[in-house]
Figure 1 (tube, rainbow, N blue to C red):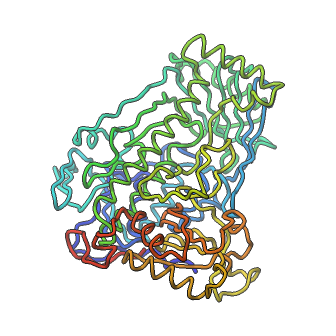
Figure 2: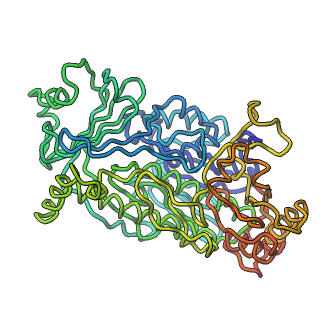
Figure 3: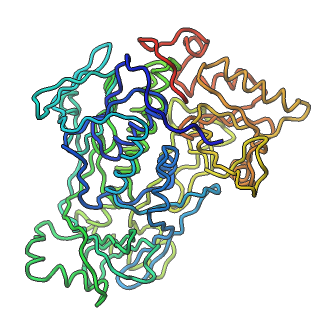
Length: 573
């Protein structure tokens, strides 16, 4: 039921994919490629891992799902789980959001754990997968040609050149060397106000499983405070502070201690880490340039309210990895990589829009915006309708590829638009499939410990989830007909399953509510690509080709020769 353990990349004669930057996005991208059998080389300019500060702490369920597939599921047990987000105006609670699960995933909606610990765990998985990492290789230039990519590096021994088939640039916000080499703009906004972050260790009963957001508290008048629980009785406190804030002066005269005491009272505490940030909203002009893809903070920067930074970077990595693996296997044309830009650039713009709206509410630009904010907060004390206008950060969620060229629309399953905060859209083409427990056909019955999740099965390749066979059709013949239509359209692996044969709890069927004869085509990143009538082979085949960016005449779909530029063993799905 569970996919095979990650294995070391084979085929040493093939140029590896170069992953530039060994932060969590680069680590995840390298692991995903290696898991799919793609040779990969991870490159970082630092001499070694530097575990400085907690940094990005808030990891969303669908990101935890990716890491669990890569063998890093221990992050869930080690991290601190929370499922409630409370928002206050001064001393009054305005509302709380309890995060719903559209399926029945065993993974929590959010886990808080320090980025440094996440990186340690992912390093362990990289070592187990046999992924090579070149430390002390600071990227200074990049170029590409028809056969591959060349990366220039500075090392302690002098300049070095690295050669790869493709490059994934995960160099973070300061990785301008790649953007500049490709001639890509990185326009956006820098917010004037600054934000003070302190991780403190203290005993605060009742706060262990909640995110708390305060507008205009008496201990930070006119501004905001965000409090997140973390493992080991650590709490992240985030104050909005003026542009001229001086952390050293606050520490010297005792103001920082008074600032903390205003929140926690006389409770003993210790400061684990503190820093001051100025936030930006920027999106790169393009996230793909030929054989080079930009991921994470190298491609987009957003304010952290809503935890859309690292979470969206991991989703970049998953989108890029399966598509690149399929291209290198000859299952798709190189132009499938253009859909990486189309889908993830749209996601980056969505995140920029959402977080910019939050920042305008948190940090009004003018008197009119300030008046609107105060009016909304005052009304929200008594009016339910006004509470929906209070913006304390819409929490991270997977992007919906409903407008993607890889998605086949279904008139009977339209996308209903961005749902209310704390909820998810109804399953339809473009939306990520809800996770839920499943059992393999013929496996031990439910309740015997043999139950797994649907998501690891989906990453095996393309998946057809079938509703009940329509009246008059033999169930076995219906399933085999749908499978045959899909496999005639592609040489990529295809799995066909009756939903009621694997859905051990009924949660997935309840979420999808499939019609008789309906087939749900799901991509390797768990997004629904199409909902089509399974008795129509043409519709199934067309949806598969669309999902892979192919036309009816494309070679791989028709069983022709691979379109990659050199033969190599096909990666595992």
